[in-house]
Image (cartoon, rainbow, N blue to C red):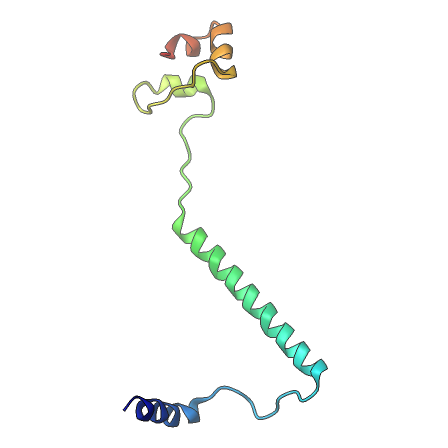
Length: 104
């Protein structure tokens, strides 16, 4: 039963084959055609991957450019810094309004 289905499928699909009648008979021609198809496959795959990545990822632009701008948006964003890091030291050294608004 299974073999009959495969042979019927091949019989139906045979007229729709996309191959040409002239195939390269020498190794140099086969190598060239194989290289061309590999190149095309890589280009199409790369293009499709980049297109999917471009269409699915949205880039969010933040409404602030500096830490002072972040502090001015009180309560809009939750943020913090790790203790005992260079960022904590820079906040402690500076006596800015930003430094006084950071809760550690």
